[in-house]
Every structure is written in C-alpha cells, then in structure tokens.
Image 1: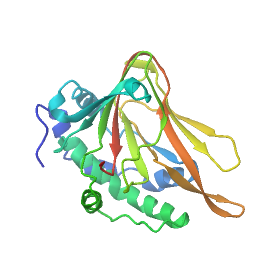
Image 2 (image 1 turned 90 degrees about the horizontal axis):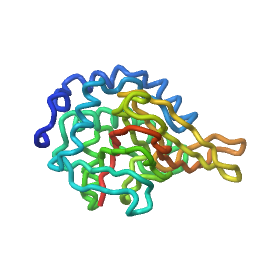
Image 3 (image 1 turned 90 degrees about the vertical axis):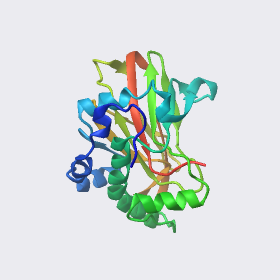
Length: 249
C-alpha cells in the first residue's frame, strides 16, 4: 500500500507490527473487555513509533480534515482524520487489531441478540462499509494542549459500526503532559453511571466498546451503554492515535 507524503521513517517501518499484535495476551484482553468494557494493550507501539506518528500532525498532506472541538461542543482541543492511503504503520495496525477483536464483536452481538456478524478480515468489513456509502477513513490523530479536554461521546459514523475501537497514547505522562486521563463511563439500566479511568504510558493502547456491550444479569443478558472521553490536560501537550475500524459517510 502507498504511504502518505513525508511520513517519518518509523511510521513506515511497520513490518513487525502484525507479529507484535499476534503476541499480545488476547485471552486476557478478551476477558477484560467482557468484564470491564475496556482492556489495556501494553507497549503496542515503541517510543520511536509513538513519536513518529505524533510528528505527522503538522503536515496536512496526511489528512482529509481537521476538527476544532470547541466549534462543535465536543470539548477543547483538535484532531485530524487521516486520508487514504494511510501511513504504513496505521495501515498494518488497523487490520491486525481488527482480526483479534472481531471474535469479541461477534460474540457480543450474539449475546445481545444482534444479527450482525463481522467477517474475519478487515478488508471484507471495509468493503461492506464502502458499499453502503461509508468510504471516508476514520483513523485520527488528536492533539491536546493545557486546558483541553474531550467530552464523553461515542464514535458512530453511519449504519455500519464495528463495536470496538482502540486509542493509543503517543505522549509520555509526566514528561510530555500532566492530567489528560482516558475516561470511560458505563450506564446500566436503573443504575447510576460507573466511571473507569484507564492509566496509560507512551505506546500503550486501550481497546474499548464504541457504543454498548453485553452484561450478564440475574435475568439474563442486557445491554449497557458506554461513552469515552479525556479529562482536562493540566500542562504540556498530549497526542493520541484513534483507531476506528468502520469508515464514515
């Protein structure tokens, strides 16, 4: 696959990513997703890879659009959606992660009584999205400065939604920024919302539910609704790579 213009070398040197993803403890990750709605993927990217992806941000040749959160009531900060063709690191990482998450997604839909099933390969799922008019790439790079934050939200871009996504922290907490914790909230029926703060280091990722997930109750399985966001940045600058597996209209 071709690469975006002027991408740093570490972004294009992604030949070992698939095997690295394969070596992660997927039974444990799946178990945590089932029990908590999120799971940490430690050391998904190296520090060099993380910095190289963050360094793409100023070059608009890599992106299709820029969103300033404050203009839309999303919070404070900004992000850019990558354009096709994606940089090699992202182009390889997206299908490698999808391949392991699609089994969880199918199992969740079966438990919730949802008929939709996801194919084993990401290319086949993207074909489904594109045939439905969802052809715009959704991987994005977020940039936060001191005082910025991301309101609780869900990344739903059309009829076809893959129920899990991954966010990768590209900056080092305590060195590059303070504050800016990843926050996930879960609303169960007839209960108050539960908040989960996920600690991450540079290169760590968190996989989490996009919209809802199944929970086993005393009367069977029911759906719980989830939203995610980022708390206020106290100082410095924070970059995050968002990996969404469905494309947008």
